Image (cartoon, rainbow, N blue to C red):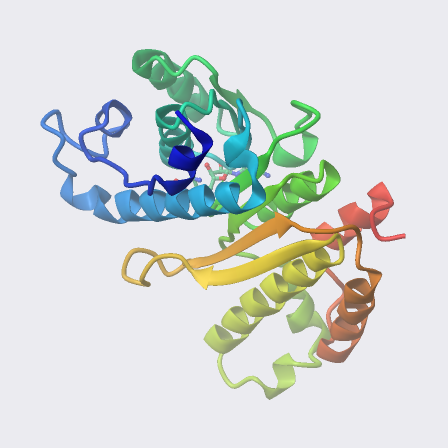
Length: 274
Ligand SMILES: C[S@@+](CC[C@H](N)C(=O)[O-])C[C@H]1O[C@@H](n2cnc3c(N)ncnc32)[C@H](O)[C@@H]1O
């Protein structure tokens, strides 16, 4: 396939693809099961956006594209990404990490059935994983709490071309805001504080990505009826470090009144913010 042709193909997930049936999203006739519509929509849209970002970053012109998926769970999205890259002749290598051993075993069995040779599911904690020295893209879809920070850190440390994370629940800033009472004393309802803590966390993550020279888009990647956790942080490496963003982050922390997030701690320990 020529470079030009590769760059103009738009990705669309097909409910009849083998992996969609093998993972139980569709039935044997390729019809999406009623309870799986939302997941089908999420992984399809996420993969479309990954496709755009790989194109923008130039990774689409490589012979091989390497991706790591953090907090992969049953691997619906991992399979969707492998399937997409394989269809585009990008000779994918995909690793998926999750501490749920049973799901990782199931993922490897399904990968075998689908003939996805270079797809491996690995059990372990995200912040202890040491796989390849470099992945072109780091992705995570609803990796719980600070596992999203682990994914972002992995991408920043290896300077991946693309980092795509849809965060899940988070407790770190919420607990911190409750303890410090600086902001929480003005908030009338717990639900507001939860939502504010999510936004404060994601905004902090964006600034830290920007400090390392990433261009960041933040989008609602699917309609909220498909998931309430529909914020996607999409980062592409553009330049060297931009320390001004870290200075801004530090003012942000003190003005809002929280102590920081795991991502910052890991970046400091790695010497990325010095
Ligand atoms: C809500 S599920 C999302 C699964 C999948 N990405 C999806 O969207 O279908 C979150 C997954 O993250 C995994 N997880 C949470 N924290 C983790 C950590 N620190 N290291 C590895 N896996 C983690 C859980 O075991 C779980 O399978």
